[in-house]
Length: 152
Image (cartoon, rainbow, N blue to C red):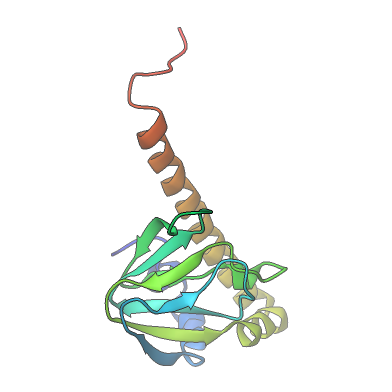
C-alpha cells in the first residue's frame, strides 16, 4: 500500500534511516497476538509482509475486527501517547514479517532531537487521523446508508 501514512512516505530519508537503525526483524504466525487492549504499549511494528488485524473487545463476543493492516503500515501508535496503554488489540491473520521498535528508545530519541521528534509525532498523528477517518466512513456505511437521514 502506498499512503501518506506509511513510514517510507511519511518520513524524510534521514529520519527514516535513523529510525531503522533501531529496527529488529520479527515474525508472527497466524493467530499470534502482537498486543492486547488495555496492556502496556512498549513497542510498535512496521509490517513487511502479511496482515495484522486490529480488534476491539466486545463483552460476551469475540473481538470485532476494526481494520486490517499490511505492507508498510504502522502497527501500534499508543506507545507515543501517555499513559502508553493499547487502545485496541492486534493479531496476525497470516504469517507476518515486521520490523519491531522499542518504544522507550524511540521516545528518548524524540526528546533528544526535537526535529526528529516532530517528524515522528506528525507521522503518528497522520496515522491516527487516517484511521479515525476510515472508522468514521465504516460507521457511516453501517448506520447511515447514502441518502438516509438527510436534513431538508
